Length: 69
Image 1 (cartoon, one colour):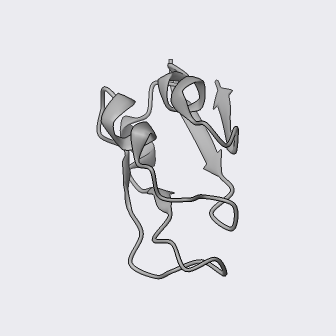
Image 2: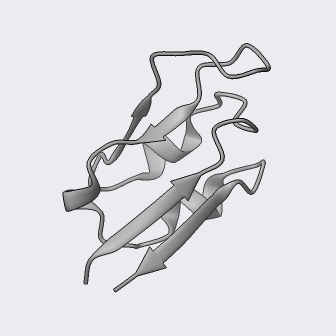
């Protein structure tokens, strides 16, 4: 099953719990800061995502949406 996530990078505070939780290492630390001055998590490897929702479950800001095919 293929998956896709959307991260609201404007609201990300850079805790990176989603990066640690992702079993396929699909999320990385962004290269640019957001409006709040944080380096947000970014969904990078779309072809590897399985839509497991682990990233969304650990996000304290509840800013990750998960979609499955």
